[in-house]
Image (tube, rainbow, N blue to C red; front, top):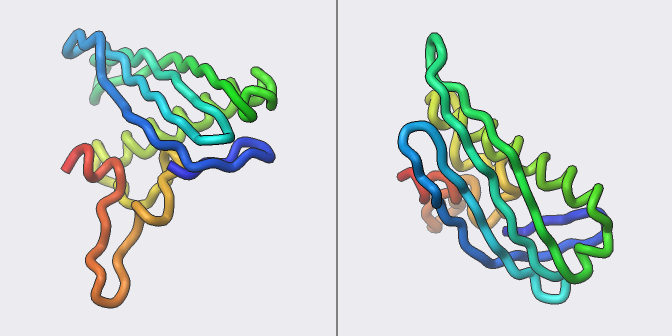
Length: 135
């Protein structure tokens, strides 16, 4: 994932995992990534699902830890950025689940241009990260 936080820009390589699954009411989605000289990031969200009239309500609490150059930006900036990324992720997730969104738009989680959008010329279209996860 390519991401810019304040003046620091980095490409992070890592993994995402689901744990503490208590279907159908809650789970934890967590991830960890290394961004070379920029540092590392790890965190996640505790997700709760509740049945409501007309559908399911999803609520979540986000936590993040960082080290390296990114940590020098300060906790307030990092906490706000983590919340913003989570909001984007779950907004796109909602669109995909409800059938009105495009999983390949790269809107959530800062998907890079390499993973999103249609192919050109003789190259086939690459699937976005969410499409690979759900497709």
